[in-house]
Length: 168
Image 1: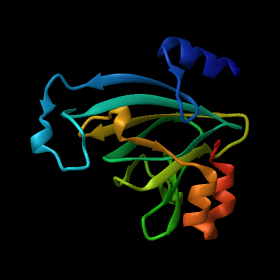
Image 2: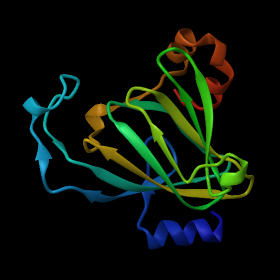
Image 3: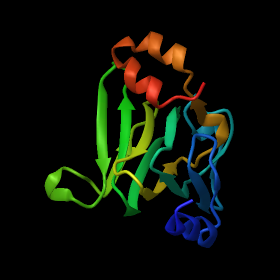
Image 4: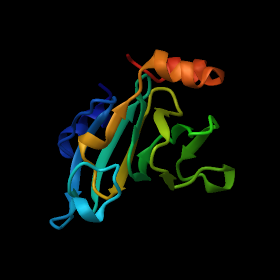
């Protein structure tokens, strides 16, 4: 593990994330939204909002997945991060989260609810440290990890990137 990555993992107390990379939940609101006040897609109450640190290294990736809420990505450091999205209409967009605004990067990105997305580090031998904020708050019941064959069948025009960013 690169010394800077090791330092960040230890200092921020990051844990392995199921979709790839490392994470730590740093905020979960104390108050919650009741099930009856939420759309039907939610199966129980949810915190108002949650936030995590997320660190990913070159040669690794965050596998395609989707959640039931909007997710806001915030760039903190390291290499720019590609966030690959496939929307419900089959449109593929490769977003670049970073600080080089003049060249099309954005320090913040919103991934709409229900969009398939995964991420990869832009530069070799590097890492990306970002934050992800979800509202209503994240719950693993709202998380769906993509299966390569099913997603490629649904979006055959994107089978290459789907193959690159899936594990199952």
